[in-house]
Length: 215
Image (cartoon, rainbow, N blue to C red):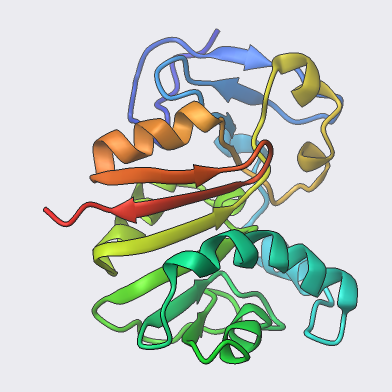
């Protein structure tokens, strides 16, 4: 047991350790069901960026495009050509924005390591594919996303969700040393309650679509 503060909900109560095959330490918050990597086991920012740079994703990679479509297809019914979007955490090879352009929808690229642009005040939608798991301080990052999301705006997230401690133990997601935050579906329900959002859609494993409440 540990009394570390949860980086999502801020709960300071005792946290149960979660076993994993990798030699890193994880704790689960009983309040919001986030599993998080202890700060002592995180990579340095320089090592994280070096690891990210080994990814070679682009629109020319059919497998990567098919992966992004797992988020894009379910979110498209909520998007209009008049909207301005943001691909948050686009990585070194922005692809989602190009897929959206084919639909006639504008989308900025942002990544703190590779595309550190100045963000617009607000966006009609924000897509975050495979970046929530990298958040060291998810409450801060989600508050930032909410700040830049227009009332009624759409937040589409793709991040593998943990299901059970047994599944977590040998989960491929823990093998990536840059993964710090592991969300349960209940974590997203907590986010909705505390960040003024509504859960519009979720699949069985990785995609959730949230809408910022209008008031």
